[in-house]
Length: 623
Image 1 (cartoon, rainbow, N blue to C red):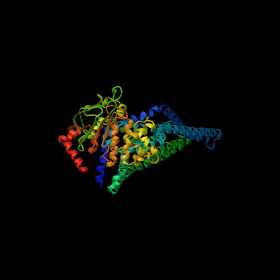
Image 2: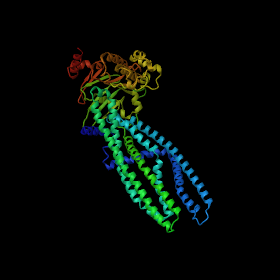
Image 3: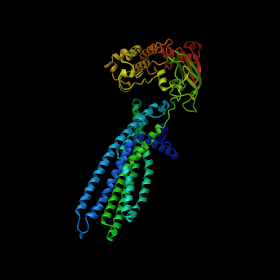
Image 4: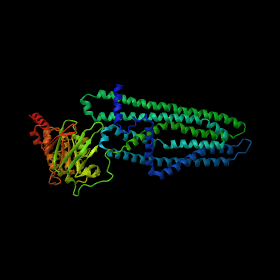
């Protein structure tokens, strides 16, 4: 089982576009990721510079007020409680008590103000980060999403965000105050009594060595926990996303084995991290207690010898407590820091991904009056991988208003043509043009208005039927939405639904049949009124009655009735079922990424070539 799980993990990691796990052993890559995450953090904090400056002031106020306490204790002991032979001065004790109360109040106000501002800034940073990641995921090319598992997308927006939120909510002031305490305590001890300070500073090398070890070890450990939880989420999401196939093929036991394995890996990764804390936290405590014991012994002798006052020794011991207590708390907080750091590295890795299909630097507008729909492939070559070409120097001209059916065996390059026209990918060589304009020179908004793709998934979003049709043109009125549904032939079944056009289609349109979902998708495309319509296996999952309904809708769309175009609408129909091809003006037969036949369907049937064979096989299947 472990071998299978390792293989599955390797595949999942290969699909992870940020490549953090694959590059974890590459020191240069880790350095780049950390630099990228620091730049990301800087850009997130930059808009809050003034509030951060105020936070720093409040933190310094809190630290100063906290550091005043032990010194006031020294004054109270040495000045307010003199030896019995001397007269006591109640005024000094009262003044010290008042000053102590003021210091406590200042520390309270500083901490309260700091926590309020840090919470405000932290939530604003998280809001901005979530927005950036979501927006970036939407802008990344289809190729990215085809190799990046949905579970990892969920992991970036949930688990990784939660780690950063835990850091924000966990008390950044503890981390900063620990650093301030080191500097403040060291300076005050040197001022109060250099010999005692020297004894105290002997513990610093041990603290630094332990902290450096913990920093290096925990950095690796928490990066592994982020990778491990990502695998858990990936398997969970992918298994439930394909729950029908899982249950149909009785895959539950095998999926449970894999889940148990990745879940156990996550447990082991967390255990490794906790083992580090189990060494670090007690280690800090031991160093602190030994230091206090040594200072108490050495300081006691100095008091007895009359070299220092009792109040100085008491203050030194209190300052040591203020130094080591935050260090112990820091060990508990450090796991959140390391986990958030690893999460930020992964998010910065995603945000550094550049879209494979970028917006053009300089744009060219389509001819005045809107797109006519003329398409041309000029010596186009393309492959999803450099060593595996899919299309080989394809030259193809599709006049405006023509319906072209593309047929061929699986892997021949049919869907690749559709994806290039929709500009989900760019050609490796050559160019795809619309009305004489290279698609790479069109703005994304103009291209999406001119070219619409309807796929076999006929994806519907949670919401009403009307909202799903209106997705094709968000500014459409209710009347225009219903008119589009009538034109397509979807009005009757929509009106029969419990809520009519206001019926919730449920998740992915689960309330509707496959044919109904496809009709809604066609109504959406009809309402969008594109110059070019791409149908990628749009009827492959339908039964015969549903297919006939969809074909009638398809004829309506292709007629260009919505726009009144004299030449109809340009269409590319990718189909295995030749019943859909019957409505085409022209058929293109592909084999191995090359055109082997091209012409009107009747002419190709009469020629007795590959299409004629496919056509005969289809007719035999109907008889």
